[in-house]
Length: 220
Figure 1 (tube, rainbow, N blue to C red):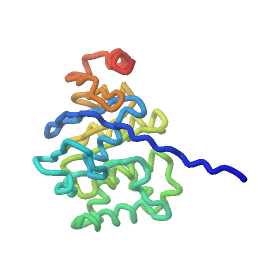
Figure 2 (cartoon, rainbow, N blue to C red):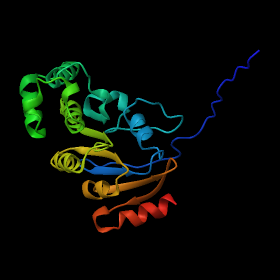
Figure 3 (cartoon, rainbow, N blue to C red):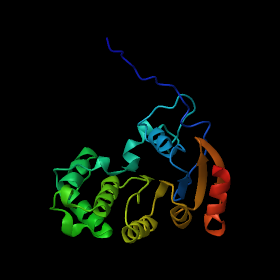
Figure 4 (spheres, rainbow, N blue to C red):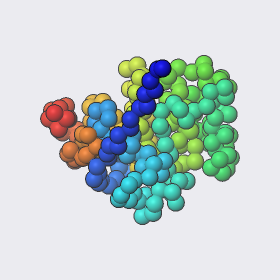
């Protein structure tokens, strides 16, 4: 008679005593290797996960009370296939009660350079085009706070540079997660270095600091 084996699941702490603030209009970068806790942190901030202790406040209130003020880019999973780019944006615009949706879609897609692709199905988009559509979807309701989780992951150099340039032109509060040191330096006003679920260091002026050296030292 054969044996049955069942997997064992052991609990672990994904984020441990992490504390930071983001100022209005600031771009704060969360920089760390894979598994450092970046995505877990933003899921907590967006109320997709509940912390076992502590709290998150967005403009003085729990994130669940501020959902209309938060835009989230969490990889390509939030963009629907078998729909056109236009239908994706219209669907989310209607969810948020956006007035004059067509004008808002034209404005965003002109800014992001995807106007010519709106009537194409997402299956025909390149990875870079999907990333741009995901940013447009997050901005459709004109949120005060934009959260970007690895916005250039898997993109070629040219497209990654283009998306970074668009991010710098956005006039709003942004929380950015990345494991690219140069991306953190280029985009962020401040950088929080994460390692094994903890804040290892806060860099107040990343453009004047050797982030690579700091990153390698704190990740050791």
